[in-house]
Structures are given as structure tokens and as C-alpha cells.
Image (cartoon, rainbow, N blue to C red; front, side, top):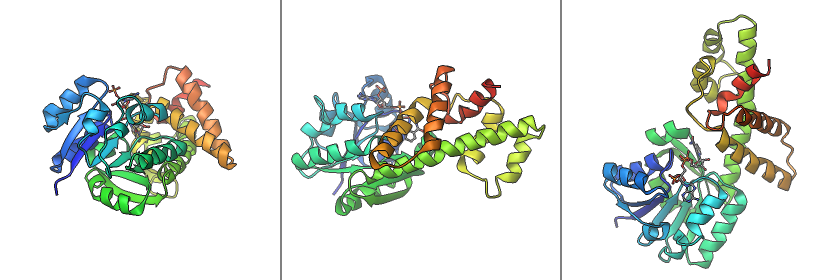
Length: 291
Ligand SMILES: NC(=O)c1ccc[n+]([C@@H]2O[C@H](COP(=O)([O-])OP(=O)(O)OC[C@H]3O[C@@H](n4cnc5c(N)ncnc54)[C@H](OP(=O)(O)O)[C@@H]3O)[C@@H](O)[C@H]2O)c1
């Protein structure tokens, strides 16, 4: 049976993800707060537009959502004209937003009360991963429900993994962000040191990226860092939102995150330099500014 899908939130990530669903032949109805973006999306992909999240979701078997933070998700799900009020019995809500584990539990409860199912499914891989259909997706929820959604998410992902009950996807994404925070600061310090030592930074990276220090950030970000170019990539504002979620969860489960807390403070300084929308690799710019 052909599935009807809805996609709420056509931002940097949501727009290409919904595009992959349409390209795979699914019938997709979209909603975006700024209507112009929904019109542009429908003009290129041929899908339908809902005037509200509820309207977009009413005939869907699965509703996907990718907005900003916890409150944004609440507004399109449990808020006025949110999807949960309109979804048909037995249908599934999949949230791709990077949000708190508490929100996942809250939505799981709200969905159960309405006769629906919920999967939290934050993503990693950035704009490039969304556009190329190569995201990594970490999920929380019931296995039987996950199994129904997995092949559909595979239209825009290279790996879709169930990590546990509702919230486990968000907890895994927190681990991802904790690992990245310290790593980007380490890469920034390395490049900064190389420059001070009079080395050719690009040549240094060519050599060491093949060894134990290699990382995605090193391979994909060193060139722009050396060129002092940060108007691209994953915005510092989003990273601070994510680190706030990690630090708050850490306090709750008594997990010490000293480096994450320090790097979060550094990102606060990047924001004060006007870097709200700069890529997270701009930690190097902050280091140089403190010379
Ligand atoms: N960008 C990345 O590299 C990346 C990577 C991994 C995860 N993520 C996560 O994915 C999520 C989306 O990121 P993005 O880069 O796609 O962000 P984005 O380009 O800023 O898009 C955000 C989307 O959410 C909508 N939205 C925000 N608040 C809303 C509200 N209160 N009600 C209705 N719609 C609302 C926006 O609508 P408008 O168009 O009207 O503003 C837009 O469609 C975030 O949680 C982010 O942390 C991003």
C-alpha cells in the first residue's frame, strides 16, 4: 500500500530530507512556518502544502518533523493546530529535531494518549549529509514501530539505528555533540600551534589526518579554518542549544562534562564576537582573537 507522508519544517535539513522522500515516490505533504519556502519546495518536488501542521498531517501514515528546539517542536506537535490533534489512529510521529530526552518522553506520552506512536530520531551529517542522502540517524522508540519507519528514513540516510526506548535517540545525539565539542577545540589548538610554529598548516593536516589524530572535522574543516572562512556549516547558535541540552542532561544523571562545559563557554565568546551563524570550527578564530 502506498504511504502518505507529511514533513514539518523545511529548513537547511528538512527541505532536502523531504525532497528525498518525494524523489523516492512517496506522496508528501509539507508544512513550513514561512509559507514561501513550502511553495518553493512544492514547486520543485511536486508535493502538497498544508496551511497548518495539523492540516499537513491529517492523512499521513507517518509525520516527520525537523524544526529548531524543544519549544519549536511543541508548537508544531502539541500546540494549537499541532500535528497530534489531527493525526489518524495508529499513525507515527518521527521527530528529527535535536532536542532534549525529556521532550521525547513527553511526546511519547502524548502520542500514546492519542492512539499514536512516536520515534525520536535526531540526525548527524549536516547539510551535506541531508543533501546527499547520507545522514546517520539515531532513534528511540518501540522496535515494531521503528521497523516500519526505518526503510523510509533510509531514503536520506546511510545508517538508521534503534538505540532503545523513547529518548535514547536524543541521548545518543548528546554523546555525538559531547565528542565533537572537545574535538573541534583540539583541532583549533593544533592548527593554531602549527601556525605559531611556522609550519605549513595544510601540509601538517595532510600528514596527520592519515594517522591517529584524523577525524571528520579535520578532513572537512581544516581548509576553511586555515582560510579564516566560517560562513557555512553548522551554526554556533545551534551548537550552543545542543551543548545546553547535554550539560543539563549531564547534571541530571551526574555525568561530569568539564571539557564540554569549557567549550560551551568558548562558543559563548564566539557569539559575542558576532559569530552566531558561523560554523562551529570558528573556535580557531576565537583563539586567534585572544592573542
Ligand atoms: N544544520 C545542520 O547541520 C544540522 C545537523 C544536525 C542536526 N541539526 C538539527 O536539525 C534541526 C533543524 O536544523 P536546520 O539546520 O534545518 O535549521 P533551520 O534551517 O534554521 O530550519 C529550522 C526549521 O524549523 C522551522 N521552525 C523553527 N521554529 C519553528 C516554530 N516555532 N514553528 C514552526 N516552525 C519552526 C523553521 O521555519 P521557518 O522557515 O519559518 O524559519 C525551519 O523550517 C535543529 O534541531 C538542528 O539542531 C542541524
